[in-house]
Image: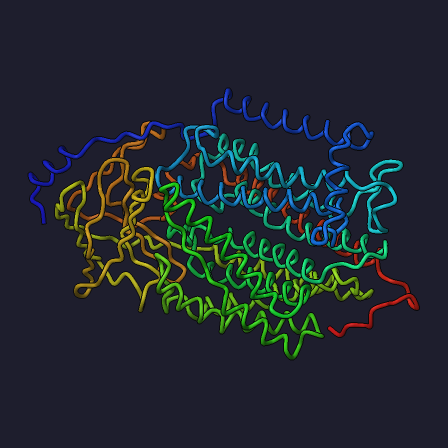
Length: 614
């Protein structure tokens, strides 16, 4: 332990860091520049659409003719294939930008402005590309090329339902950009993935894959109406890429856990993994065929793993762990041997097994690959939430495939199952984000200088801090600087009753924000070890020193930027608006799937598919 004089010398010798980057909204000049860029891109897209519709832009027509002659791409009508290719490239671009952006925020904290963060550019262009792909899907087909599921936009202009949905999902995600700035102006910067406007970006992009699946089926149906034989290999490969993309999009919600700085309870991670796996892999196996769940996971691992490599070793930022999903894919394939002919029962059974057996497999993987491995503290609640999420998501996957197969029942049951599944998922998510913090826990810290701005810590709690094994008890330092060295997570080990210590030195100078984080049961709490002065927030430095400090609500330390003088009703109102918009997006996707299923259903006596049991 350092003496008072020696500790003062260490603190004085450390470089003084004062955080002075803007803590609220962006400068109006940057807002104007970003808005101008978006306006220019929108005008350019509109000009392309109008020129194509009027016949003054033959380039798009020639491109579609070339793709139509291709044995591989000719599987789909070219007016569907071109937008799908644009959307997939845009999604991968946005994915790279999102993980790069999260790594930068963990390493250096808040932005100096939206255009000062290089990761924002691929996000912006990627999300705009998704929306543009939807617009292209609406603009490319001629009047007689869209089937009965088409939506009439104007006299002589029918757009595919999938194109309308893709436009809506992409635009919803894109709107998250300007609304994020508005949110910062009102509430301060929320340096967390799960901020409401951030969820708009992620949710719109991820759910756009459902719209793309509808567009795929509309394009394939149009090709079949011409009497052309489609390539089974091409169809399988293209669908596997789409569902692999769906798995990627659903997995982005887990990104804070991937990096090791989650700001919500650990039970959310198995919940989110089961949700993504059950929905995506049930769709893969039912929609595509044998082995498709494994094929979708392989596509996911290549793309999602590739993004981790690019963001980490290539760009020099933080590494993000990757959930495997291989065990879940095997579960789905095995269940399909008995229940593939009953989509809803298949989805339900697969989801329950994913929430239990799949939980065990991912539990083992977190011990190897993740900064915060799962512990016994979350076992009961984690399995329960994962099982409910898996079952609900599996049913939703079964309903989606029945819609894509055009065999949705006419009764009210699909709507009821849809509503009940969404309600179950929402209930689990709500349970996962509700946390408490103790108001009577204090820790006495003994600091030992380890050199180079690092210290060893011994923490003596005034009472037993955990019941059994904690979900995590760490010293976490983040925002220490750009690059892979901007995050440090050190698990505390119990030396004797009530006394815990680090086994490796932790950073405690410069721009680092270092704290003891404790998560046990429903409790999330933290105690500062070292926090730099923040001039923009008028926050003083909390120096590293021996002494006793109280544990408080973790969010107050992780998100110092949040305004504390905003009335609660305003946050509730703003959050409710975002929630209602998200519900509208989900309901819109449900409407699009139902419209395709009902509008293109073959008539009795003309090749109607046999009734499929639930």
